Length: 298
Image (cartoon, rainbow, N blue to C red; front, side, top):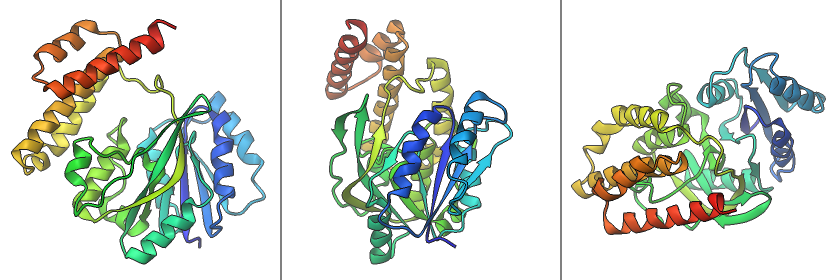
């Protein structure tokens, strides 16, 4: 039985997976097991490539490989992983991200020192091999729920999280009806239940692609409706100002999706008649200029 179980849900891009696995092998904390859940579907090109890669590690008893019969999505893959895990603590690692060597050591120490059941850390974002951002320090708070729901603080992906298996069991893990922002959905439910430790250390490397997984406007609206259906009753308990800010945040996110999809009519309608405040309009306008320069003038 390992102290920490690391779950890698793998779908597509097997060429990045080896670095993710190597980052676990390079941990200073060595009492771990690694469970790779292959969600590509049996017989697909990516599944065959992933299995070929995992065969290189078949002599390491700490590394386990689970193949899904068919693609079921990231939430299902993560649930399969943690439910089969033996560790007291669970970490998730996206198959294109990497842990820095002290990640497991630092987070185990944080949980054991504080007695809390979950902790997140800061992260570096890399694009095309170049570091483009380091996440800012998050001030200590009694509760992170409202700032997180408002998008004011960012714990990035599940790759920054270490959580006790008992807490995951308590909330029944990921909601498999969510095909987008599964980590956000889970974190909101976790923050309702438990206190969170936020570590100032930078322990994760995120390898980002601005154009990866961009939804269509229609699909984003469906996700937004699903999200609101689940959490509106919670949001209604927030102070009035926070409720208004959540609406601003939702409109802003939809406007960004419209921008990515070049739906100029929707973007301009939301920008001018969506009830956005000046600061939000300014930030969206800046985003518009940056995206235009980056992708349409190069």
